[in-house]
Image (tube, rainbow, N blue to C red; front, side, top):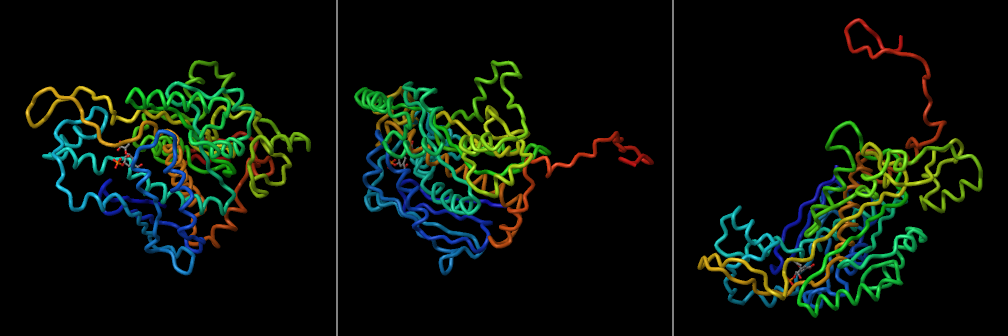
Length: 423
Ligand code: EPS
């Protein structure tokens, strides 16, 4: 339903993106994109480039009189740094950085200078993704869906699990915005900062883990019927497509893998009492009236170890994804490599980069998750305009007994000719 393309080099004139498939009638202005673009720029341990840029997206098409028209939305973010590069003789780059696309890009495309790999492989491209994701978030917000992220580990310094779990997701989002490591466990923030500082002194880089969470999702997005319609694969793939992201899990997938099934699966109950209903609402923070339904006969979970998906379909519980970011491959301390021009052993040379990009990557993660979820919502609701989507959203089947009448009688498959189903 939705698709997007980005174009642009890290030090070229601009980044551009085209987002196609947005319904008409969505109020949208550059202001809606500004906040996330700014959030992507700040972190303790960010590179010098972020002092040069102040990313702003211009909307060049697809929005008229403040609303989307259904036409492709073209976005443009200028690279301020280009002013310094446009007249300059570019030094040759012939020694590939291990971990970057320098060597693999040259093997694939036959480049005769490695900068041609660097320019497009750079995580600068994620500014365009964040602009696209912000448009998707604006659509999702119309239906009560909210996406946030926070950092849980940097360079081995990890947020305390119990302290984190004592906080609602909304509170974790809020606390993450209060510091430049985007970590909601405030007791660990200074230790994280010290770790990044140490890494900077050691002229090195650090990676880490962040979580992206979507709240207020209706049940029933995605599908179990085919591999490429399962939301699990689509979400994990989207996060793994981000630069330096090397692992993604849904809920606590790797931890669950070591447990018994009875310890992992989220048991199903019928919501009965008002107090339980209130507790559940607080716990899931599901947001909108529509999503909560009447509450009568609602099927609920007391745990969310599945991370919000079963069979590749949303359960209506918070969607929780965790991503592992490797340390950035541009390091001040050189790594051993080979100069492709001479064939001799060489050491990498440093070009400005981030020491720690984990907090910034979380914002990019939100954008990719927003894109996949907006796509899944459009798939479910169809509709060329917001006005068409609204009544369809209000009529969505919920996980309630009254929405799920069962035949409760024997029947036959009826695959073979002459046999009928339930007759
Ligand atoms: C980035 C811009 C880049 C890098 C960084 C992300 O700008 P420059 O190369 O001019 O410093 O700082 O990209 C990488 C870490 C990388 O490995 O490519 C940005 O806008 O986020």
